[in-house]
Image (cartoon, rainbow, N blue to C red; front, side):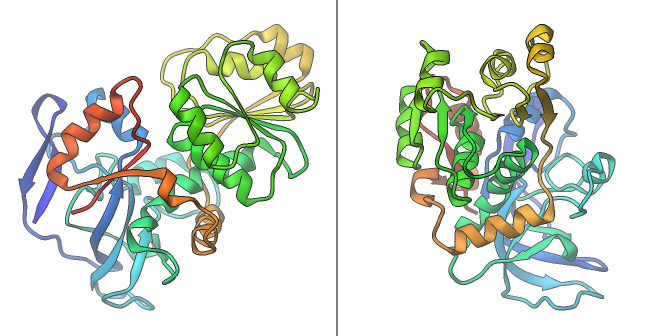
Amino acid sequence: MKVVAVGPEQTLEVREVDDPSPGEGQVLVDVAACGICGSDLHMLPSGVLPEGSVLGHELSGTLAGVGPGVEDWSEGDRVCVYPFAPVDELDIPLAMASGIGLGTNDGGYAERMVCDAAMLWRLPEDIELEHGALVEPLAVGLHGIDVSGAEPGQPVCVLGCGPIGAMTLVGLRGRGFEDIVVVEPNPGRRELAKRLGAPHVTGLEGVHEAVLGALGGRAPEAVIECAGHVSAPGLAVELVAPEGTIALVGMLEEPVPISQLNVMLKEAVLRGSFAYRPRDFDEAVTLLAGGRVPVGELVTSRHPLEDASECFAELRRPGTEELKVLLTP
């Protein structure tokens, strides 16, 4: 079968490998679609992935086989995959050890892949099979909302309308939020935010006045940072209301400048948001099945495995019009 593997010097290359076989408690998944995630773009050049690793953790497909001891699942079942052990508490060592597409266990940039049956989520017939690959990134956005503590009726600001910012916006709209302002410097993505239902969208010029004006003079009680830019956490502190909460969802490895004085004077709370919990997967499936996710706006292109390297290059390009790219084996 074909896989996209990490090659020499952190490249991507298509390889032919033997089909995997499910072991005790495992299943074999025929991959229908696997999304390219921002974390994949970060990990590939980092040097942490052994050569031969197979990335990909946003995936859906059908079961092609079940291993010994697997109950309640059968060949042909439509599924998406929770890409690490689905526990209700934060356990990063467990997530890294059990995770697929993280360098330890092969992921979904492949025609077929093996995972534990406990990682499966059933996809209703109301969800197109490829669209099941959106469950994972939508769950990231939903968990970021949970971490922010925001409730419908409160003013909320989303920083960035890239893939996760867009999913966060969709999650807010799906939960009934109306007082939302999205801050996004890219004009194309500002237009996307409007198409996704953002009531208010602004760029960075005059952003403080624009956010207050959009929310009727109120500062946002929650700011959900999805930009993954070094300036974004500091801007979030400037924008958030006194005693408000900032959820840090964007992925950054380098230190960021934040005004401790602003944090202190506002008694603001900064909380990190890591991945999701099983309830977020449940909600993401429900939103997709209910037709409350504008999939046509979120999925910007589909490509065969052979195009993976070119897709990575395009997604890294400043100003790209791509949002969520699916690899479809």
